[in-house]
Length: 472
Image (cartoon, rainbow, N blue to C red; front, top):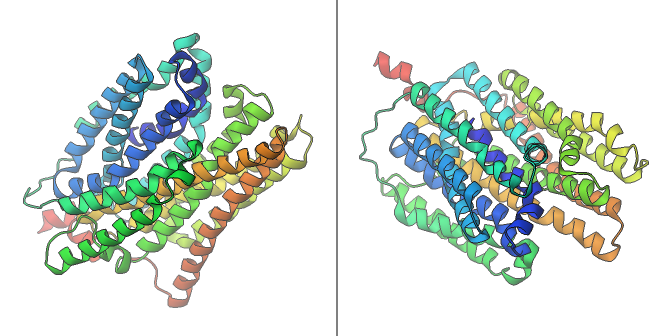
């Protein structure tokens, strides 16, 4: 429930932006911050929040962050002007960023073996559904909440669901004793935060010329992340726990490849839905609800496949991701071809089964990749590892949501009515990112076949399990 709300709020607001801009008398740049501000603060918090969960108490941080998310959702719904709405969205994204890494860390803490694969399967289904049904949910809420103030219910809907999630979390999530003696690397927090901010800020400002105006922040961010890496290695050599252990990327089998696969996939995957919304609503004259319904087949296929793939990941391993990425490329590529060349009056509907195929492939990507990336991470590092994995995905999503709509508008700038050509070019660029993700996944699969070494549970993972603790 918590993961669904936090990820859904990345995309659900997009369909309401024109209404919000009109009702709050905001400029295009101001209203864009309702979306981009949430994504920015979300991405900034992830690694630090994961490390705090590892060092302190995942359950407590999860519940505090979830409560804050509910409170700030209500503040967004009640905002009387655009300034307070943007401030509330920044706070809501920060709460979501503190909540998200505890999700994957608690799964690693509570489940082992095949059960962990199934748990990550449900988690992957949640990610797939929330990513796909955001436009549909937003359109449905706007259709049901009649009137100029109906956009407020996009935020208010989180309140009853969030309160229920808090009550269930207090009852069901296990308490974990922590020594409280572990320190948090404050210089590392500052370096990583500034580095991620420098990389993400120009991207979230892309529609207002941020890429051209703030290009210098990219090398600055890369430099800060280089200094951060050196600082983490120095702490490790001194025997001090770093914010993000570099050994995750060098000694934990599958973590570096899995993080790369996820980042590349989200570059192509995230921007696709904004392009679809623009094409259906501006190019074909669909309402927000109709636009959401047109992409629902992908969400349905993704939800079905993600729940099943969690049970197959132990048997098929990286091959499942390779097959899933192939299905996504074929499904979305076929959809792009149909929308480009088929008769416009029937193209969206004959594309539905092809999009469903893409959704089935997508359901075999996110969940298995999360499982294989995190399965050998020691439990005491689970929060930071999950936060770093999701930070890469947020950076990839920021690149995709900036680049693909930018290409779409680039074509329309030359020919104002060539909506189909704009869609096709933007989709082709998204497919390039997915193809790069497929190449990396195929490399990892072939390497596993050559070495004949299947993924195994990490001994440190077992040593931190509740069962092992009780036996000791």
